[in-house]
Image (cartoon, rainbow, N blue to C red; front, side, top):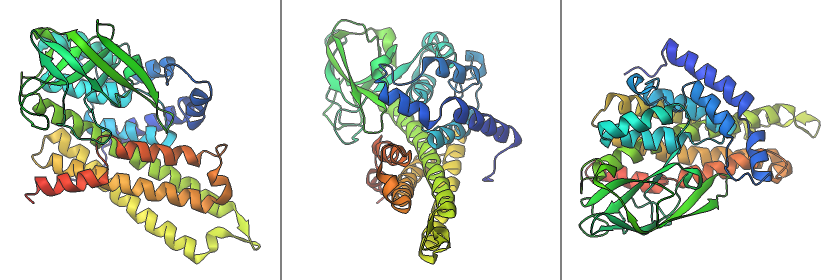
Length: 376
């Protein structure tokens, strides 16, 4: 498969690049943080993004979306990474839409997908229960006549979600892949308690507690007891899009650093002429190019539903997490003292790189998963 973008994809990327830089730059994230914004993103800007097709990039045209696939979603995510744009793109337009496409009933798709694509509905995916990502460690129980009891951590945009998709154990032992079921839950339902949690990168997640929350058969997404099939697809989608966002973080950090090396003078010369710094920059350039290739290949594999897509997701997430860490470290070091200050934007990129790398499995989780998928 050719690792190049089509003309339509290039046009889509360029439009996303312009919009993110103009309407959702780093300055907007800083303002949201400083103002202690209760939402964590601009609903007005998100609505504009939806009008451009961002919220419905994975939604088929028959449900009101643009159906531009994972490559299209990845192009948006890369520009989000470059600008640190605060949006519910990952939680609602990727995770929730993937869950509905993989396991939603016709009624669920008809009702929810157009609303998501239009930017009118935010759905959060609540699955992690441990500090570190362990997708099958689900102790939230569904007992009796579908009553949910448990606690979910790190629910992205959960504090403003209009709906929740909750994973629960309907049979089997904690840690088992079988016995998981996904449910649609209304955040205002009796027994649901949501506590906002601000993360180090100035984004927002939530802790969701469920106490005897009643759900119905119509709320099930996918097959009862076999929800891991949908869960795996959702997590792989999220990991691939996070890898694309991390690519954008690395690219922007690198470009800002190069500009600084060309401008900063020391001992009467531009520091970019120092051979040691040139070597470090050249190495980072090569690493970013590797990430660009593996991310695009992974997104193409997800669109084509290739059997090796999960392995490629692991490769992309692990490599992107590592390179984004290196890129932001180098950016802070080469900027010197100002790189450590809050007034300078580089610190925002470092924080986002760390948070995104941990979300849905860090590089160590994915190197181990890659080995398991390869038969080791």
